[in-house]
Length: 403
Ligand SMILES: Cc1ncc(COP(=O)(O)O)c(C=O)c1O
Image 1 (cartoon, rainbow, N blue to C red):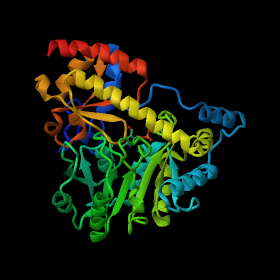
Image 2: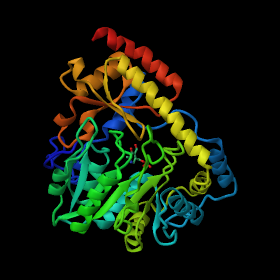
Image 3: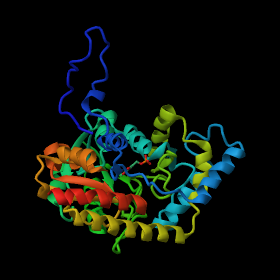
Image 4: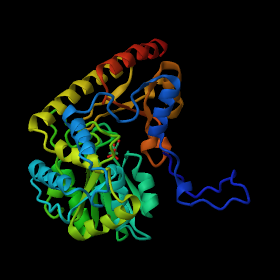
């Protein structure tokens, strides 16, 4: 996804065509999803888009089948089936110790993607600004444009992807309506610690802003990293909108079930947007979601352990192929430095990799406001099965031989 500074006049639009939305002209299609299409076109091993290529848990799939057979096939309550909301609340209490009222503080949406956009549309007014850490998950750019927020980007600096508190403070001001946080982070693998969250909290309180915290990778943690929800930080419970989903934790990215947790008056606004945008998420899959959220603790331990093995496997493969890797402590991506390969930029290298070597990855520029800032980076995902890693390793040998 590329953000454009000014609405480009579409040269191709015929004089007689009605004008398209100026908002839509300000961003391009998703680069991540485009890389998946290129992977299919060139028969490449797809290490670009973050969807698991291994099966979802049998219990959860069975629960969906049972729900369909039980004829839970009509609209669920627009803001989410009660069973699922109850389990989301129980889960937040269990994992983070935060009590939320499922009746008035949870909105179930079509994936966290819709939850994020509905949340932004619920709080943004013309002239509002949203602080976004950069590199950022590429959806946040169009989310800002579509909701009408002006993004203010704050750099996460490699190798640890830390932010400079002064740079963060400088991004806040009277026009700031929200900060968008993603922890554990895509694409960097950073897990924000308590001190960092408290620094964010101080600014939210000082400027009276919301925080929208995308915590979709909460269970993918390595090397002793701990996930702390921003809502647990003193003073943040009622100004944080916590976004999460079934997608990653239960390997069901295609189900499109996510949610937003927020204080009652914020939830009321999110529910209004959500209702008129989608009416509701798939009813039988919400039933299955309630089952998923009751998985035993061992499910999450195994998930994290297996992802650790996958992370180390991909670190090994990329390292042997000559990539400099930033070791992630969370989520399921590896950011790499590709300077050593001598390509003009990340896009040229990603194109070469997918077409000539047969491995798809995401150009780093798609995570930055200014493409030049990401030109030495490429992101790989490790939510893949062993045979996929094996195939990638075999193909990347060619890269080593050629460099
Ligand atoms: C940080 C982040 N948020 C949200 C999403 C999308 O989640 P969902 O499938 O629930 O819409 C992704 C998917 O890659 C992601 O990386």
